[in-house]
Image (cartoon, rainbow, N blue to C red; front, side, top):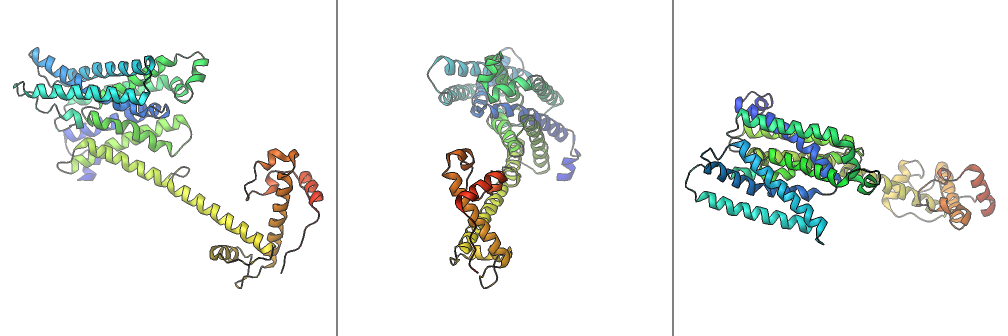
Length: 401
């Protein structure tokens, strides 16, 4: 059944949900990248919670006008207005008061969400019966998604991606170094506001699928996941969009193939699964790569210390050191140095004395700063410089057999 869901063979509604979730994931991942690079991830939390009063007020207004209070376009417009007001309040608090940004985010988030919960309570007492399902905007609901709903999500997501393509360079510059962007004459405040506006648009569009609480995860987890794999900002944007789109598609497929599984939370869990995989397996920043680097470093340290011990005729008691020396053919099974081991040990001891001379010579201050106990001196000094150091410390000494 899961394969059928992946192939869009589970019916009209499941296909709509899968396509809508994929488009939302692409837009959210790409947009959230700039928020992540700007180190303002919590702003998305404030914006998402600020949408709830707008949803409730839009519902009440449409009911008062005699319409269907659950019209998606009307509810999204209300949430957009409310989120924009919340964003303006947040910017005002940060710029005009002494509040730190995290404190301002907490204030806006709690006040707007509390006001929204109060309005939800009022709506439940209206007695019209049409408020059923309005709570789904908290965690998302796709069971009754229509073609018009999918088109709203598709158009909103496509518009957000188009704006990202247009503003990618200035937003990247502002995200990394706003002071430099300001020095170059860029309107940093307006670009910041446009960035937040894109986040607000994606948040509003995603209310139907993942809800205002979980949309934060879809904005932040894909960029964090993508950051493990590359150092280039444009590639991070691309990978974040791919991770978000894949999470949306696979999450919707899992939800469609298994009964009673909510789509929004499943999408977030799939996104988290991608994050865990990247955290573990990414070649540069992953945990496995870090473990391998540590093991390689540990091996180099043990070999270096073992060679220095051989050069000075000291016994070696460390089991790992002996094993590494034997594996490299530097000592025999009985612990006695081989001919290759004596040569390498003499070279290690010679290099150690060279480094001591370099570190005590002010003329080699820059080279001395690179000393870490493992670096070959040939990678730092030229042959002529090494010859000069050798003349200062005298000739090489033999290694005990």
